[in-house]
Length: 407
Ligand code: ATP
Ligand code: MG
Figure 1 (cartoon, protein in one colour):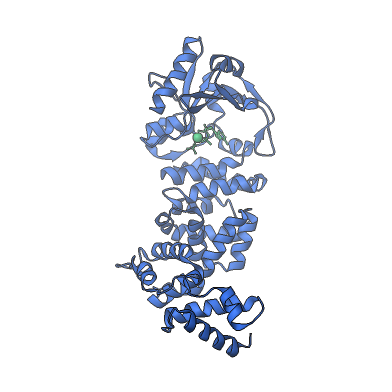
Figure 2 (cartoon, rainbow, N blue to C red):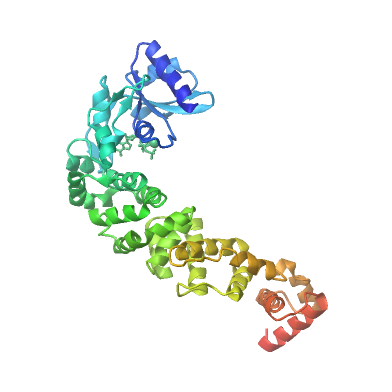
């Protein structure tokens, strides 16, 4: 369906006298029978011509010759053939130049498997033997590998990321060039680094990705990350048992036995968002508390976790523990958390028969931290010590609690 709509763009451009091809990732994924998620088109038409032919468009990257054409509610990036001038800062070309030849456009691309174009009759244009490399299951740089990584050091991580996504090898000369140019990664904005590492962790073979990161020595100058990926190369198989990215990071840190302070350092270094790093630290904090050893929690521990961390966080911790045990144990008890939840007479402070305000009035005390502490204690007493969930019983227990602790 998407493919048919994109075909119409190629036809329209050709009808207007231009060349047009599918190019890059979509060709690679189509040849591999993988899901194609975005279709890129390249053409010898200049952006101005593309805009005239397709009045419904958005200018997303005019500087780089890209016009986003809208057809049937979908967007397709149409980019004019271009070469790139001298590179600045090991990342971006200082200039781009439109050219009239497809081959020159393919030549600026990073890896042979990403440097193929296909016309609307499904004829392949593959001047760098990308198809051969797909068969050999390898990532190989287009042209002189060292130069290509020197131009743009982000390609170092892209190579690893594609290898992990496709379960491919990195061709030996390309790997040798990566080892040589690894220090250049320091020039890449940490946000871009994080983005690529995230894609690698989310891939089908994160363990392989971690192994390649270490083999190429991409993080030797960041010892915490180096250590993390070293462990990841042995433990990362666990990552595919959880879907969520923060949970994947949590598993990696847990397996590598990082302290919370080390986790914080890595999160800061990678400029993770506040929300992400807080969730990460919360999950790891609970994991450490509930199971310092790699052992299965007892029902009572599950119940304590639900009461103290809330159900949502407990479910996340449960997913992490299941991933940790999956290959260690024959039988994993997937129902334990649910059983613990069902067996709790009260699941959270809101379900208690008294509110904080009720306590304040009954005990004739001012508002203060004591309320939260007493509520938690009441929660535990109803859950574990048979305290009835009635206002009279709870208030009596609250009085005791306050007297005992001299709140
Ligand atoms: P994905 O499945 O992640 O979208 P993709 O191959 O489409 O993979 P993109 O980052 O979307 O990757 O880039 C589209 C195409 O542009 C690539 O296939 C490649 O040909 C080219 N390209 C992208 N980034 C670079 C780069 N840093 N250096 C050289 N070529 C690049
Ligand atoms: Mg893409």
